[in-house]
Image 1 (cartoon, one colour):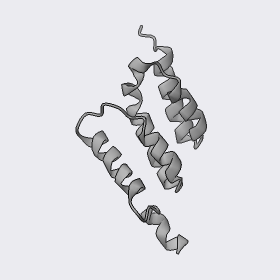
Image 2: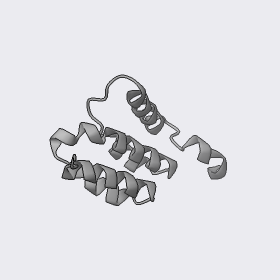
Image 3: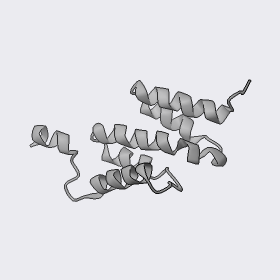
Image 4: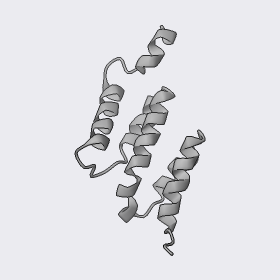
Length: 102
């Protein structure tokens, strides 16, 4: 029998909140994690950045991208870098929204 810690549980619940479209509740849970669990929440923070980007909320996307730390090289680092490049480019309207905003 392995019990989950409160931080493990908060990460799972935060992911569920995000899946249900309640990012503020997810952010609240992720923000209160103990420092030793920050790395475990990297995937959740990237998912939140993706969510906000799809909602065209570039400010919130930036804020979510500020949280993942010590990402190993690979898929998560590439995704973080790609999202950051999209957010910080001169015309930063999400590409799938351009046709409807012009």
